[in-house]
Structures are given as C-alpha cells and as structure tokens.
Image (cartoon, rainbow, N blue to C red; front, side, top):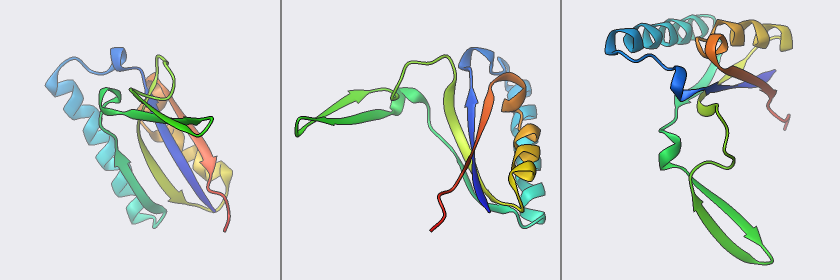
Length: 114
C-alpha cells in the first residue's frame, strides 16, 4: 500500500549553522538510502520555501491567487516521501525515523487506491 509522508517543520527550529544543517541533511540522505535499499521508496522531494508558494482559490467562478501557503501555520510543509509498504504500521515506523518527527510533524496519509 502506498502512503505519503508529509514533512512539516517549524522554520524557527531549523538548525542555525551550516554544520548542524549538514548533519540533518545527512540523516535525510541516510533515510532515503534505507528505503531505496528496502525497495519501499516510490518518490520524494524537498519543497522550496513557503515564500515561493502561491495559493489558488476559485469563488463564484472567479480565480484569485495569493502569495504564500494555503494557511498560516507555525509548521510548514517542507517535503514529502511516497513509500510503498506492507501496512500503516510500517509507514508510521518510517515516519518516526524522519528528523522532522523530532521537531515538527510527519503526517502519514494513504494514497487513494486506483
């Protein structure tokens, strides 16, 4: 079954030095390699900052765009993985390994079956 692991972080809690950031990125690279090796990796990407986002809404037939994310929150969506695993328990186990689980949140959502 496929699940999306949505990675949310509070930008104010991100490492404040290059060395500390490199350590966190190394953890993400190790996690990615682990799920590639286990053949559970489907895809994943790091997203650009929320300052580059544009939200689109259509109301009464009129399209409006707004700079920034959909909602103002402390935690921002920073990236995602799509994994193909045996069950929800395995998806949750993988989510707990992500560095963001320690300082933000990792939302686990099943991919709608087709």
